[in-house]
Length: 366
Image (cartoon, rainbow, N blue to C red; front, side):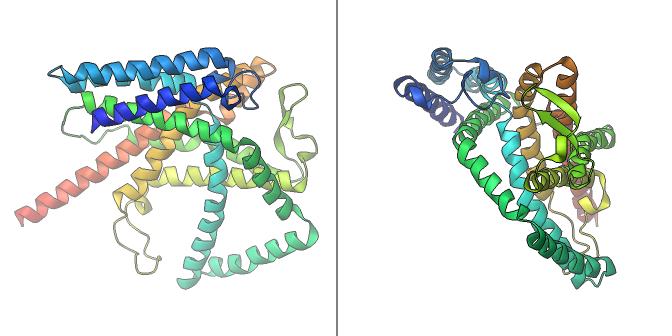
């Protein structure tokens, strides 16, 4: 299975290299590209094709070499480490993080609606109040401004203009994950898992990472919006000039709400409600939260952040000044956020696994 995966990724890499070479317009990177948050922004088509050919050939040679080697998994693993580093540090970029952020907007809206509905079923007074206020606010926004319709147009036009570029970013990220999985499977050994003592501290640190961005973007619905960017000078401004139109400010606010959601969900990894469904939830209250329900999305988020980290650093280098670069990394702290979130998810998984083993042992003794 591992050799088949390595073979598939390698052949796909060579196919991409051929596409970029024979169809010049298909090359998505380089100085002419609109997206600059990645090392690939500095790689033109010729070198880019060469790097992909080298990656594909290396992968094929690794698979062929493993056929005659007794410890073939280690042979593939050595190649997989180099390949995953190449796709992570060179070919991936922060477009992955941007697309995840926009995808979270409808998730936030649906989540709020679901919480309000569950609260009403549980006869919570706060839920009754929100059930009245939220629709009233939506009706008012639709009546007083066309911000909602313009926001939807902005999102649709954005994905229309950058959709292809985002697809390439995800393709490179998937290749990185595939090679990383092969590397892990080649060198990992089954060992007993202990619950790390640093789990709580790491989780709190991971939860704090998206807080600055969330707080900045939430101000976009106030008369004093923070965190603007002047495209003419390349500088980050403390006060967003005019805050943009209503649609832009709504868009910023909703993305900020996604960051706040990330804070809450991360803290759930060390909270009671992250292990047991709250009692006020109809039918499910009091039941254990499925481990993978937290580990799956958490691991996905950690991978997306790690993949985006080199792109964030590349974007910071291109800012108007070192101060702007530092502010950019503070708003998008992927280089530390990704590893911290991954460690927090691992600590949660280890703790839940240890608890399940303890319960199983108690049942066996009884």
